[in-house]
Length: 505
Image (cartoon, rainbow, N blue to C red; front, side):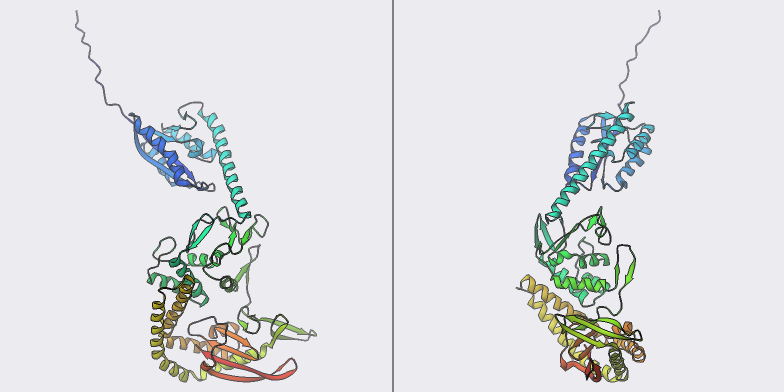
């Protein structure tokens, strides 16, 4: 009889399932962090309690309703293709993907790889052969439900806008809590510096260099500011205390076309909160920016006349307009014209051109004398400016917010004048080259390059060659006139003088 020996089974080590969690947070949800915690928290606890599971990784994406770019999902799929996953656990079908086609496509690929997906809310596994039909229905339902939530959210925001409610949660220069804007003094000084610098003709690169030199970080915490950040701030009406609601649609700016075409309403709330700068200053900057180009709702670009926003009338407190009058269809006459409250300024443009050309010729003929005089002034002027800057910095302590903002603007102005003065000789050479061309033939572009400001007051024209490139709208002190001429003209059939005064600031 054969002896039969029973060999007991040796218990082996049971292989654990390699599990990953996938979560998707929509950018339309107000509290993304809490949504993530809710999705991941319970799933993590459940997996860690199961002795047959090994949690490999947690993947999470922040996805808007307008994009399919989910980097974490792609990383998870790459790991799955490499054979590193046995089971994917997600909260629900809606959290795995918004789009039905994308959901079905991912499931089919993962199923071919032998990887199971478990949807906790629906209590469904992709190993179930009936899953395809159910997924089509549920995913479509989930997409519609998500769309409805998005629609309700937008409706709620629109209702709030119609009431003039605040929808801004973060803005450099302010601390915003619900409807209350509180000015941050340290950031407000920077905002004021940016607006004042732009009005003074400081370029974006110079502003960026100054901010970097002072160690002032951008709103996003970057060491260097970008030009786009400065441009965005300069066009943000909230810095003047007003609030324009519905400036974007689906994340895109609508200022150029959508609201003009009636697709969406905008709402302007005046004096919504304390302004860091005045409304007048904000509107002046928009005029300067818009004087370059403007776009209509067809998207076509129109170049503004080079004569616009240059000839300033002190009496009218506005810029004059150049027009061409036609007399009996026989000849044309260029005029500078402006009116306000019954007061009128009416100047023949040929006299203006002649006066400008004579002033340019004076600069060319007297280059040596002007250069010598300015070099003599340079050293004591620099010392005076440095002393003035030091006093202004000392005066900042103990000032109110509005006083500090004003003082910081003065400091910025003094610093720029110091920098300009250091390059005095080079600047004079550049101006003389322009003046030579202008003295031979009038050209508005050259005139604006040479004379930073053109001011009319009564029967006097004041031309300013500004080394600081300042846009000045007031008549400077008579003490700093370097040349004057009188032109006798016929003005509305009366003979009188039109004086031209030249300043070098």
